[in-house]
Length: 200
Image 1 (cartoon, rainbow, N blue to C red):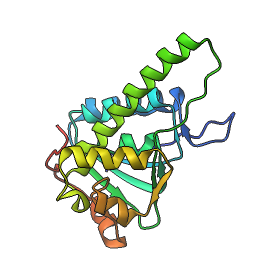
Image 2: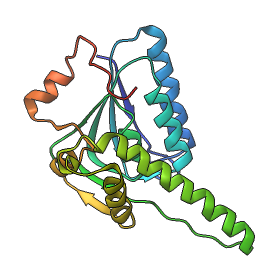
Image 3: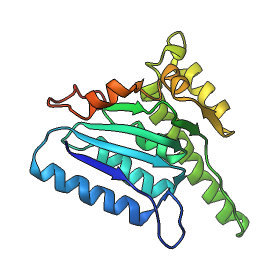
Image 4: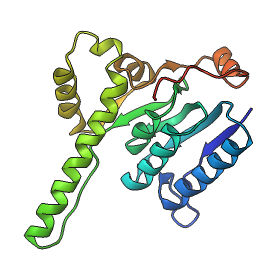
């Protein structure tokens, strides 16, 4: 089985946040596997979050991979990790994995005009985040009677806080496809055929 571990452990900081080093190592490994063949790749993820830009580099490499990427969340999938998660063709969570979404944080100490421009840039990032979540969660059971406007409004209202949820909650909202059992986990790791791509 072709597997990659999204290991954001930085030996200097001892944190599991996604940064330039971890994201670059990840998509280098991804591209190596892509050159071998175009069969499925399983990504194992556990992260507290990290950099928006480095996380979006991972998002783009996963979303536009010629291989179907199957992601399994272990322990916790927080912040930018939940955005990366949405790029995957199949999104699984282990039974005790927790999920947390939010807009993130921004601190400024600069002239007013610079702060104004920076805030405008981050507002566009926030809109991009909502659109990424919407494209997947609109199929969730919780949102089945919501319009696009209502769904995005609900997301914006909840993303202003640290929005924690269990794996089952994430499935209900459409942020994940399934919580794995012991048997299903073995099945996922024994995949021999391609899954139908749902993100492209």
